Length: 214
Image (cartoon, rainbow, N blue to C red; front, side, top):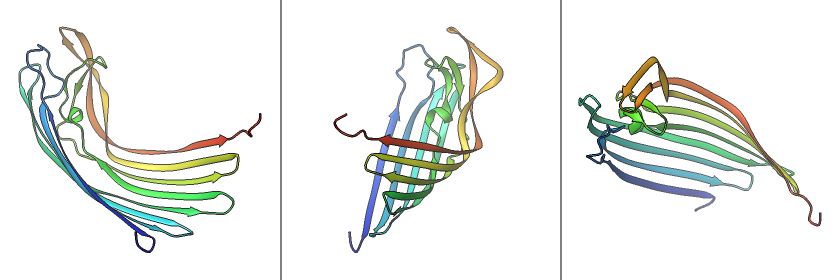
């Protein structure tokens, strides 16, 4: 920290290995896969008596290497890699009489999960047959939040107003009229797909502290 400036840096590395147990006589929901992830970030913050400003940037890289056999004993899987940059800008403005205003805009992303890419089997917990899409792209999101808040002696509240746009939003949808029959019964087919989505809303939190002695 120097003259109100605060800096923070960091990095992470992870490796995930998923292998199905052989000999169970069940077709796995997802194939065997290895996933490698790494990322690095930097955050810069300026703290002054009348306001606070913060900005951050992050880079992430992720890979999937999958291989398996479906219920028809056909090979499926493949290799995918994803990478992107995300960032955020925010400010806090204290005001008089217990009021405060916060605002933040952020650019984020999410790589598809192994289920979303490679599912090809019966999901026992949901009682449906899931099919992934190995050609999926990453989700990308832009979100803006504005939060006025008040902190009084007994009463306090916070109001979050937000708007978010997500490109390539990933979701599972039922495949109309498609069912798959297994030795355990007949199950509806759900396929993972992508679309663009817009979300907006308001969250309100309020609190009142009763006086002591009541």
